[in-house]
Every structure is written in structure tokens, then in C-alpha cells.
Image 1 (cartoon, rainbow, N blue to C red):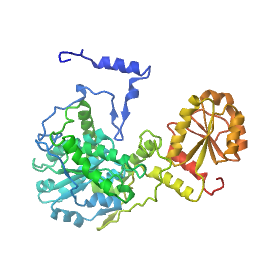
Image 2 (image 1 turned 135 degrees about the vertical axis):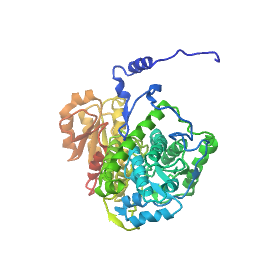
Image 3 (image 1 turned 30 degrees about the vertical axis):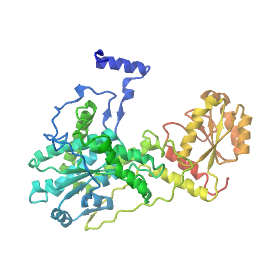
Image 4 (image 1 turned 45 degrees about the horizontal axis):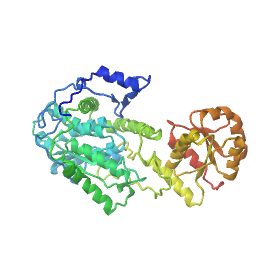
Length: 508
């Protein structure tokens, strides 16, 4: 084995093998797009790395502000950022408030409110720089103010994006120091907390995996401070277990993964370097646009930032609703029997003077799905049966994939699926409806049976259903049905419509 060698493989060889495995589909099918608008390729090579890799501690500081490895301090309290917290509350702080923070030991730039409102990595970086310009520009000694800064980010579930975001910020700060004539000692501390936006009340133990991944990306990205949130924090009632796990995740990364022994282990990866450079380039362009428009004050007063962040949030919500992005236990593989209590949401209240602005809308990704589950729980508490009938056509192996898919969608809202036996005839399907009077049914079967039975099936089922809604599984169109459940459809809207059928308790 020691002397075994492998023949060199070119990009052309890889492309040929990839195209063969795609069975006629174009290679572009393997490309994906991030919320930042960056197109990710399926393979990166050295040609994708456009810059020369520096050592840690050397400009442009992509690999770290320091030469030697150091593990981040944990659970460090950061200060208040009046600009971002004011944006969440709908107020831009008065100059007196901004001047006051220069009397404190640290100057905090906290991008978490933007993150919670839906900002992508590019927006977070640009806004961090824009806030730094605003705050440092008010100081008499700008180098001293810059050195007092703590830049605080939230790390979300997309591992490589979060890693590249942190690395890109240091590159941007190098350019920032040159643009604003700061000396090399004017380096801020970088702080990260695991994102609350990615946490779900549903199947909360999955949050351990999300926070673990986010913490890992932050440590690999070489931050100074790290805070890991308990997995059940969003329930408003953390336990000793959740706090202990949150406390131990950094310990595992340090003592088990030995991440205190290395600096920037991701450095040199063609993919990571390319992603870092692209995120940084887009962030600098956005930062320049904000400054040209008058800075962060003018952008927030005009509502431009709020509008742009809301647009990104809407796309994220859409991707979750159509399952282009998955949240295990929330929009896929949900536990239909799980119970949740009412969701309490605290509204930000300004504690300082300033001018009113359009507030950011802070929202977790799971909230639309939690609202569905809560509506289902409230219906069941009124002794209303929240169940749906699955009319299974043909052989088990033919109808099972679609029946399983429909059952998985219904589970997201806590709707119990009642499956029929294998229905070989229209009469058997009618008998199932007669035995199980429900407000909603979905026909599940292969396309050939849809084509064979056609509108005759739907007409007979509608007679027996006594006004119930009848959908069909898949993209096949059948006259007489009300709608469909199919991959790529908006399941949030569909489940809202289905749950509305149960209100009033007419059918039990």
C-alpha cells in the first residue's frame, strides 16, 4: 500500500464521469445558489483560488489576526449596540447615545438583529462595516476606538457560509483599515453566538446538531469569543441538561477535536477560499453602496436596509415552505404527535432617545411551522379530530411512495393520516370514505391508475364525501379534485388551508 500510486485525474475526466452519472442531464444541475446569490459549483480546483494565501497574522488577515492558535473564550458578555438594537425596536439612536458608548471599555457592533430579521452573510458583513464607520468616525482617536471594537455575529446552520463569513470579515477589515487610515493595531475582537433563528420548538433535540455545527464553523473561522445557546432556549424554559450540553459543545471542540491546536485549518481549500473571496467582494460592494447613500443612518432612516433584508427573509421562508431547504423535525420528518405550548414572543422596546424608523421584523425560520402545529394542538384540545384520509390506489409498492410523502407533509401540521387498505376499485375507495367521514382526503396512487380511473373516481368520491375537500398526490391533473400535494408546492399554505377545514367542529 505504501508504494501504491494513483493516476492523475483532470477536470475533463471528472466532468465526463459526472455527466455519465447524471444520465443525460446537464452538469449545471449540480450547481446551487446561496441566499447571497452566489452560485456554488460541484467541484473547485486551484484555478478558482484567485489570491495568494497568506500566513495567519499577516495581511489581509483572512487566516486570522494572530499567528498562534487560540481557542475562543466562551460565554463572554458583550455590550449593547444601540444602532442594531434600535433598528429592531424601530428607532435610530440620538447622537448623544452614540457618543456615550465611547466612554465604555468596549464598542459593540452587534449584527445579530439583522441576522434574526433574515439578513444573509453579505448583508451582515456590509452592515458591520457601515456601523463601524458610524461609530469610529465619532471618536477623537479612531485607532483607539477601532481597537476597542467587538464585532458580534450569529452563526447559522450553513456551515461553509458561516465559516467563510468570518474569514471574509478579516479580509474586509484589512481593506477597511487602509481606506480609513487606521494602523495595524486597530483590530477588533470577533465574537459569535449560535443563531436563535435556526432553533425550533419542534423536535428541539435536533437543535443540538444545529448549534454544534454553528459553533464548529465559528471556531474553525478563528473567533475570539463564542456563545452556544441551549437547544431549548426558544421555549422560554431552559433545563439543566440543555445548559450543560451548551457548555460542553465548546469543550468537545477543544478537547476532543483539538481545535485549540490549529489556526485556520480550512485555509487552502479551493472551495472555502473561493467562497470567502466571493462573499467578501459582494459585502464590500454593498458596504460602498451604503456609504455612498449617506451611511447606515440614512439607509436605516430611509428603510432601505429593512426592505432589502425583508426580501432575503421572504426568499428563505419560501425555500422552507417548498422544502428546498430542510429543517429536520420541522418541515420534514416531523413528529405528528408532538405537543407544543403557545409561542411567546418578546417585542424589542427602545431604552434610549432617537428618531423613529421602520423596525426590523425578527423571526425564526421555524415559526410558520410552529404556528401550524399550535393551531392543530388547539383544535385537538376542543376534542376536534384532526385527521385526514389517504385513499390508497392499487398495489402497495405503487401507492406507498406518494402516501408516505403526503403523510409526511400532514405530519408537519400534526394532522393524523388515516390510510385506506389497497383500493383496487372505485367502490372500495367509496367504502373507505363512508367508514371514515373526514373533512379532507388525498388520493394516493400511481399515474397509470389516475389515468385509468380519471374523473369517474373523483365524481364518485365527491358524492360520498359530503362536501369534503379531495386532493390528489403528485402533479397529475384529475378533473373533479380540489387540489394537490406535490413536491415543490408551498406546504405552509396548503396546511393552513387544510387546518381551516377543521374549525367549527362540524366533522369529527
